[in-house]
Length: 279
Image (cartoon, rainbow, N blue to C red; front, top):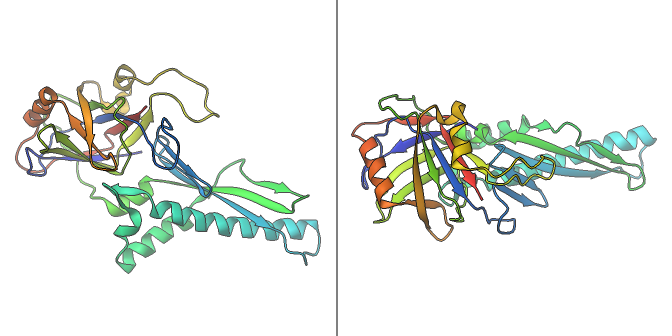
């Protein structure tokens, strides 16, 4: 998932060199504590690690179906319609800025139409289609990238290469941080340091049972993701989080000063340069 960032010194917004951020956090929204970057419900899931929203749909064949094939096709149409409905509800709940969700950004008809169009473009997940002849039920999953929504709702700007650091790694291990599409970093005095837009998420331990365990994700592993953080990322550490929803990392004083030194007047943004790692 691509990302951007904006920076400010103290409480003044904007003005940031090229920085890549890795946040280590713990998600606790719909899933139990320790669930990492994945929010799940009966409708489907929002996976911040993979950068996708996925919805499930189930449909039943009508009693007046002409034959088995007709029953199967009618059930498939019903399942796809339900998956689109569930996907729309999941997308509405994706956090954009703080606890503000996608649905709060759709006040204008134009934005609603664009978001709806993106949902209609969702693809059926390969291997997810199943037909149960006994229950006469069809099941499938639809999937779309979170970036498809972020591109519509968040500012996209140019990358600025003004400092030696190619990126930034923010270690938030154990801070129970809640993922969102736009993340604000604070210092311990409550001053805003930087806004991160459209971050990519990583979990310290793989949560998806279909993915083989590959060991704990650490800052050292993050440094090896050079396509995201570059060859020379700066590492800073979070000592807490702000807000009732635990949305905003609080950076240690020494490290906050490092970020301030990277900030200057004017405007600079990150693009495809943010990774958030969760516990």
